[in-house]
Image (cartoon, rainbow, N blue to C red; front, top):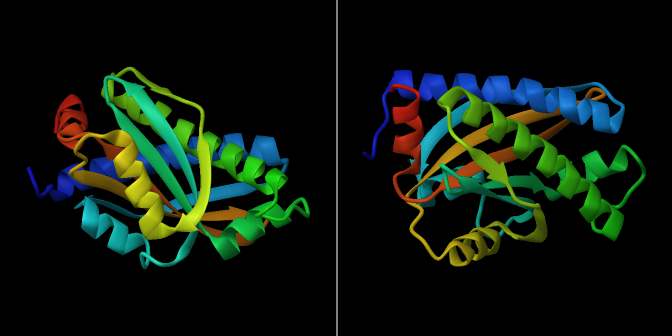
Amino acid sequence: MTSFTDVQLDALRELANIGSGNAGTALGSMLGKTVDISVPTAAVLPLNDAVALVGEPDSLRHGVMVPIVGDLEAIVLLLFPDEDAAKICGIYGIDQNSPDGTSMLGEVGNILGTNYINVLAQMAGMEMEPAPPQVVVDMLGAIVTTVLLGRGEDIDHALVLDSALVVEEEECSLSFLLLPTAGGVEDLLGRLGL
């Protein structure tokens, strides 16, 4: 399957909105701040198109990779533009390029990624467990290449959730990519009865 129906995309977008609500609550608890997350864009795209949607290959990104094991083998990849990583870390006066900044972004990515995955798992009746996150700062193209080389398996489609994150009225953007092994998006939709 290379194209998805509007009903399927609407279902994925709705799951993303539920996951973002849970993630916003959890992140707000960690930060001790008001957090709102919205998901204006949800798409299932061939991998090359997904990468093109989230930015230029030579643009700097802070990436948080959360491997997923279980019924759906995948990687959650959260990508923060440098200026937005700086805003998130700046809440506590931390430089995004310091060890503390890397740790903070890893925890933010872990909370966001895990909450999204928990909603998907619950709604689809699948067992999915996140592994510890890995944080990397590099060009977007290099991050995606590293993820793909690390998988050693075909990843044919990505679920892309471009999200708007507001922390205490400070707006940030992030891209959420779910990179399942080949056929994973179709399996997820099948479990949802779509």
